[in-house]
Image 1: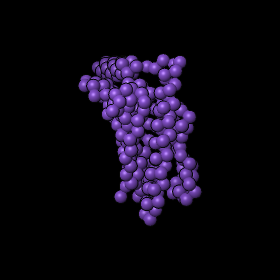
Image 2: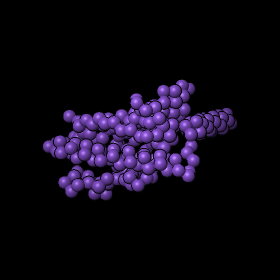
Image 3: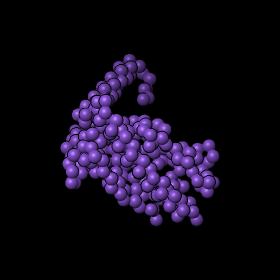
Image 4: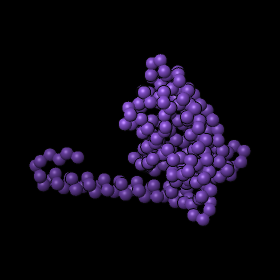
Length: 216
């Protein structure tokens, strides 16, 4: 049975500020284990929701007893998928993350919801859930205990990292607003759609002048 975690955090910044900081939170001094981040997909839906999928590459030092379960050349590399849904109307940001390698040894799934604080509308509340599981026969329990402890430690670092970025945004460097961020995502989606349409036209023209079957 997976280990379950439920926790609440608060950031003393508005939801708009937190949403903007969410895309700028790496790198920061508290998340040095995050090596890279790449956007795999992004779309602004007709009902004003911003959908994004990212690939994060992380590294974590393993205890000696756990090294036996990981190949030596990839023991410290963890690839994580992060799906996020931003609802402009409800002012919520929901994220889902899970590791795509080493999952048979240890799987960590996380769900976070960022929304306006229930008592102070100028703050942001984070509800965080996580499930840690392992399929290693005879060692699943200690691996889950280790994973849960490491997850809790990373949660503390994540909140501190967020606070660091928010403080930096409120300093000399002007922050991008929610509207600007959403507008940029929409423009990129339009550019991608236009490029796909032009490519389709080009392929159609080639098909009309050639008897060879086109593969795309």
